Length: 117
Image: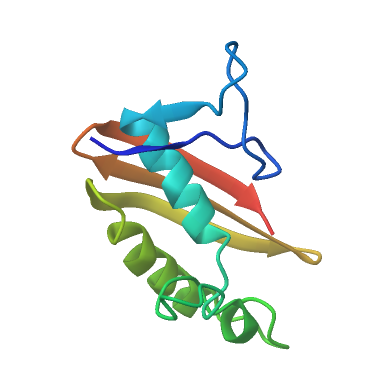
């Protein structure tokens, strides 16, 4: 079962009631790992240059390629431990904000990712 440090909406570590770094497990950990991966730019991780989304050429380009973005996002999400399927995945650009919503099916249950970049 996945176990990871719990982070807040700013990706900062959270402290538990006992003043120790908070940990999460199960589906909550899987959803958080998926959210963090969706925020990772391709090449950002110095020890694994294959992880992340190529935002430069899919979302931030002069003419965004949302099909390519979705394809990359689905592939990255499926690389997360226990994720078996990406059900619904919607992506759109409104003004200068890219938003997405994904339903992930994991061996631990179903989770939802939503965000705007």
